[in-house]
Length: 478
Image 1: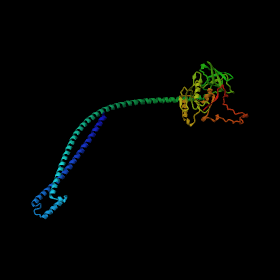
Image 2: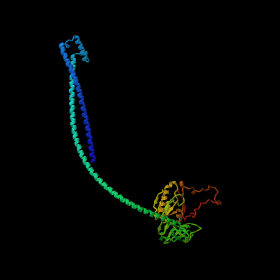
Image 3: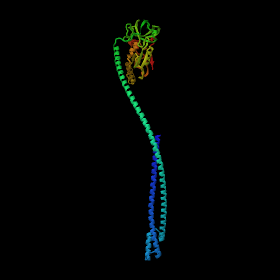
Image 4: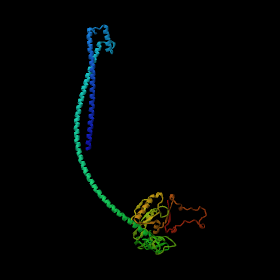
């Protein structure tokens, strides 16, 4: 509202100034026209006076000429003629020879006098009209000035009222502003005190955390230096059959399931983390509460699996699910490619839980917590395109250290759960390896093997030959 009234006042003042300028210009133009008319009238009056003198002179000469034939009293004809010629030359030079006479000159002067009088009357009328218009303009100007003065007075009163209202509102706002500033100062003081208290508490927490970190590091160092570990065997071999079948003292009451694999330790080894595995078995049938049948998946003829040997799985524990995290390139079948999903399925198949794992794009899926038991480290990603996986490796390693999670290698993990890959994947195309395709002898060539025999496929250590009972085979992957 105040802004519109101020704009109206400004527009009113501008209109007043414009009208004043217009009136001033009109008055100036009228005054100038009036001055020019007076000058013209004076000039005409002078011309009139001259014409009157000439008329008087001509009239005298006429009387004299009438008396003395139009010449001086004592002038001769020659003098008169000379005088006439002189007069005609002087006064009638602009006349034609046939019209040079005193009468024509007098008539001309009379007409000229009449014309001057007419122009003078016209100029007088114009001057009167100009004065009338000027008076009308002055009257209109006075009227408009009075009107604008009244409007200005009203606008001033309105502006004064608006200023008073604005001052009242501003005083109210200033009071509220001061009140808010006081409240803000109080809140800032309160928050400063809270921040100081929180900083003190944070300092104490950090000191306690530092002490806890040191105690944890010392404890982990002592555990790593200790000759013994906290791991214990999960069961033992109750009976061994010569066909590669064994029976163990675990069953349905122990939450045992088929396809769970165990590593086999010597009967006198009570620390699975320090003992050397002598083979592995895989559960094929659950026969009772504490009885199950298993198949030997790997053994060493020099140290065969015997009755009384201990069995241990790093994934499966009686009545308890162990939690794992997987990091790096998890290659189970030795083909140079990650088998992260197969490793996760293997852990879950054996009753474990995967809390976190490193995806192929470097994303850490899940979270390592204090409940995570092991962080299994595969191969470190060393290629430049695997920068994201390298960052994920560092993140998971740091989280494992923070939460006190034990870190083991992939080989140790597979050895302790007794896993041996049955299938070897041979890739074709861009991912093919030369080692998967050894050279073959040409047709008709003499065998180059010992005693003329054909060359044999090399055997993997600690693995039996492929058979239908073990289910091993060679798979080709595009």
